[in-house]
Image (cartoon, rainbow, N blue to C red; front, side, top):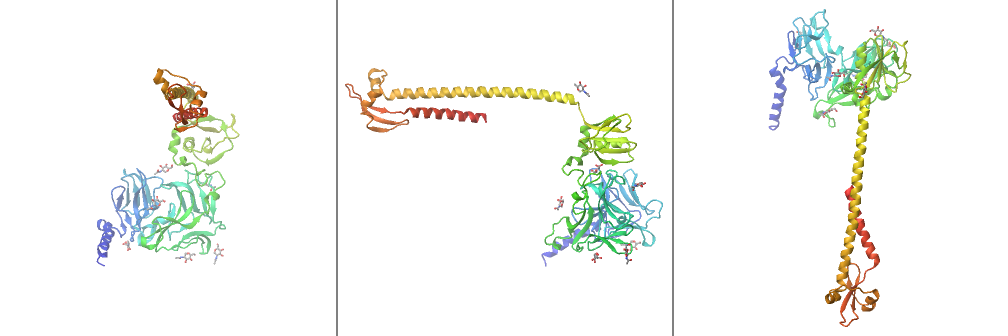
Length: 538
Ligand SMILES: *[C@@H]1O[C@H](CO)[C@@H](O)[C@H](O)[C@H]1NC(C)=O
Ligand SMILES: *[C@@H]1O[C@H](CO)[C@@H](O)[C@H](O)[C@H]1NC(C)=O
Ligand SMILES: *[C@@H]1O[C@H](CO)[C@@H](O)[C@H](O)[C@H]1NC(C)=O
Ligand SMILES: *[C@@H]1O[C@H](CO)[C@@H](O)[C@H](O)[C@H]1NC(C)=O
Ligand SMILES: *[C@@H]1O[C@H](CO)[C@@H](O)[C@H](O)[C@H]1NC(C)=O
Ligand SMILES: *[C@@H]1O[C@H](CO)[C@@H](O)[C@H](O)[C@H]1NC(C)=O
Ligand SMILES: *[C@@H]1O[C@H](CO)[C@@H](O)[C@H](O)[C@H]1NC(C)=O
C-alpha cells in the first residue's frame, strides 16, 4: 500500500497538469475564446480528455484545425476543418463575440468559418466525449457539429446522413482530399467511388467500386452504433444493409472507421489502457470489419487509377516534383491519339492540363480541347495529325538534347573500348612476362640441380684432378654392383654404395634419378607458376 502511494500521487499530478494551467478545460468554450497555432496554447479537450480540438502540425509550414484522440501517443486525427488549405504558423481559431467559429491565418485572412455567415451565432461551443465538436445556439440547440461534416473518419454514434460523404486522404500522412470517397447518395444507395483526383468534388469520371445496392429512395442514414456495428437504415428504421457486423467493446477500446488513402473503408481499434487487453498491441489495429473485401479486385475497369494509383509498384508517383524537373511539355497542334485514355477532366484550362500531365508519371501525352483534358499513357495508338482535328496534343518529353546525349554516349563507349584494349594488352604482356619468368625459373632450377649432381657424384675425381669427369651408366652399374646396396633415399631417388674400379678403390655414393621424376618436378613448377599467375589476374 505504502509503495503504491507515490505512484498514485504522481499519476494524479499528471492528470491535473493541463487543468491547473488552463482553468477552462472541462468547461464550455465561451464566446471570445481563441487558440493560436504554434503558440503553446492548450487545445480544447472533452470532459474525459479523450478528444481534443485545436491545431496539429502536419508539415513544416502547415497546421490542421483538427479533432484528435488525445490520450494516445499517436494523437490520431479524426476530423479537420482545412485539410486542403493548411493554416500557417500563427493562425488563430476563435469563437467570436457574435458566435462564429472562425479560422484566420496570421495576417487575419479567413480560411474557414462556421456556422455559415448569415445565420444566427452560437452561444457557446463544446468538445464532447464522443469526439463531436458542437456549436450550440439559444436554448442549447445544435447550430453546427463536426459530426455533420466528416472528413475521412466516422466515430461510434456518428451517423452519415443523406448526401454526406467521407473522402480518403491523399496519402497516409497527407490529409488533403485523395482518390476515393464513400457517399450516402440522395437515391439511398451507399457507394464508394474513385474521385477524379485532384478535382475531388467533380462528379465526372468517377467509378463506383462498392455499393450497398439499396433500392432507390430506401436508404436514409448510415448508423455507427456503440457496439461497433454499422448499418444502413430506411427512414422507418428498418435495417437495409449491414456494413460492419462485428461487435467491439467500447469500454476497452477506442474505435474509428476510416476510409484510407488506398480506398478501403476500415474499422480500427486501439486499447484504452495496457491492462485492458492482454494481447492487444498498443497501436491502431484493423478489426475484421472493412469494405470492399478486396480493393484490388473491386477496381478493375473504367478510366480511373486503380486502387494504388494505377500500379502499386510505382512509388515515384507519390513524389511528382521529381518528375517535373526531368520533363517538359511540347505542343503539337491538330494531333490526337484517340485511344489510351486513363483519366479525363472537364472544365479545366490548358495550363492545368499541362501541369497535370507533367506531374503524373503515368502520363505520356495529354489531349486538350475546349476545356477538356484527356490523359493518355503509352504505347500511344492510332496517332493522327490533320488540320481538321482541333485537339492539341501536349507531349511529355524528357528535357535535354537527345542528339547531344547520344553523341556523348558514343564517345563514352569509344573511350570504354580503348580502355579495354589498354588493359587487355597490359594483361597479355604481363602474362607473357610471367611465363618467360617461369621458364627462366625452371631453367635456373635445372641448371642448379645439375650442378649439384655434378658436385655430388664425381667428388673423388674433382678432388683428385680438379676436373669434372663423366661416367657412363654401365660404369656406375658396375661400380655399384648393379645398384645392389642402397644407402638411403634422397629427394629425387635412392642412393647406392659403390666402389670405383681404378687403383684407389675409391668408395662412392650413386644417386639414381628417374626421367619421370624430372618431368614431374618440372610440371609441378610450371603449374605453380600458372597458379600464381591466376591469382594475379583475379
Ligand atoms: C455549457 O453552457 C450551457 C449554457 O450556458 C450550460 O447549460 C451547460 O451546462 C454548460 N456545460 C458545461 C459542461 O459547463
Ligand atoms: C499533399 O499532396 C498534395 C497533392 O500532391 C500537395 O499539393 C500538398 O502539398 C501535400 N501536402 C503536404 C502537407 O505534403
Ligand atoms: C455533375 O455536377 C454538375 C454541377 O454540380 C451537374 O450539373 C451535373 O448534372 C452533374 N453530373 C452528374 C452526372 O451527376
Ligand atoms: C420500412 O421501409 C422499407 C423501405 O422503404 C420498407 O421495405 C419496409 O416495408 C418498411 N417497414 C415498415 C415496418 O414500414
Ligand atoms: C448495435 O447494432 C447491433 C445490430 O443491429 C445490435 O445488435 C446492437 O444491440 C446495437 N448496439 C447498441 C448499443 O445499440
Ligand atoms: C503504430 O503503427 C504505426 C503504423 O504501422 C507505426 O508507424 C508506429 O510506429 C506504431 N507505433 C507504436 C507505438 O508502435
Ligand atoms: C542538338 O544538338 C545538335 C548537336 O549539338 C544540334 O545540331 C541540334 O540542332 C540540337 N537540337 C536541338 C533541338 O537543340
